[in-house]
Length: 574
Image 1 (cartoon, rainbow, N blue to C red):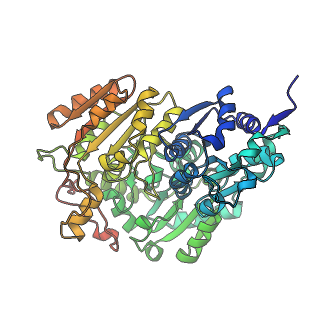
Image 2: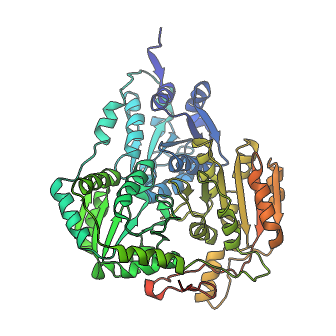
Image 3: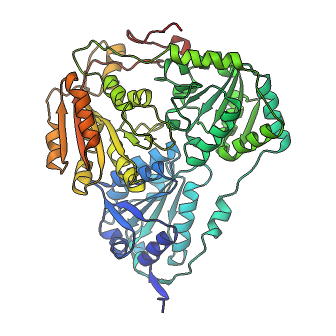
């Protein structure tokens, strides 16, 4: 006979199992110990990270790599505040995440109790919602509601503040059906025939339309919908950093990443479009501030976030805009276009776009005696499987990766875009490999970002996670180092590290069966081959050129027509 009464901790675990959660990331402590003890008895796997920030980033990596919601469980006080950066990062990048945190018992709330923090006040501005659990009777509803809220609409992180005594109290488990929550949060809106007609009236008038694809499409449904739409209309496209892999980046019509460090062809074609079709984007300042397309081109904007759509309506005055799920709306438009046999008279524009992409290849100093990050990533790009998942930290290595690693599938390039959080590469990979164990998972990191959460070497090595880490070590914070060269008289105040630490040896001590350092270009390709072929945790440290500069660059306050190509990128005549 099934047990009628459950402790709060048992109820939480039962609710997570109902939701299909099979893996959580966390770090234990007294104020969450009842939940952790019940998890140990359940079917749910616990991944213990080096710290709570990594736990939340791993849960976010789980979400970024899959169609599921990552869950992090931590204790009170400094444990929950340690997750704040990852929560803010997920909020900025619209990543669904549930963080469950232990709290002091209710009678100690509002006191100077050990490890007490006002979670709602601290996390309110950075989370989609904070649930401060007040009653044991609400606990199941809170867990299930939080899960569906996190992934609904504009996805984001939710935080559950859970007093210790409520984990210990007993209550009847109701077994609330998941449809009670999905029916509330998973409601699609559709374009009417009149709205579809308005859209195509606008599109058919354009001679130089351009698709601007954002992270709101970076899922299986969104990627399938935009590929279906553009299989019919073949409109040249560019993507944000968060949308890598939404379409096949090797396609002739796709120009690559737009923005401050975008590809030459993407940053060129944006200057010449007459209809800017923005889908699932947040209008990042590193893109939107650099071009006057609100003056020179008409705008159509589709996004699920009402506040963002209203902001753009006020600031950019789009000719067409609609609030809704991008995939649903794209399918509405494709169906209407097929029904009415819509064709576009833009063949010269298509030919121009294909030629433009071929005319402006990326390049780097191929004569340098020092290894270039661009060279490393160019070699890696030719060897990556289509289903390989790449995670990065933040810095020059991140943007070089975005430029050189061409992805063909959604959710295969995981990086922190809007918040730009260094130290995120390894914990994101821990989440990704847990969500997608059959896909190769590769971390591309720089030494500055790598050091911030170096404890994840222990997590990966001791748990034998099949993650391959590529550390490009230039003994500097390269992006800021480049900025100091340009704007601060080449004075490097806090960006250089002249001491040579053997990170490859540290990785070996942490359980990596493959651990190698490369200092000569001649050794590079064979080392990459051996590293990729290794079965299990593998670490490759490549010593790269501190003075390598990331190009192209469109500097703050400049426009796309002022893009700097550097000494090596040159136009090729076709």
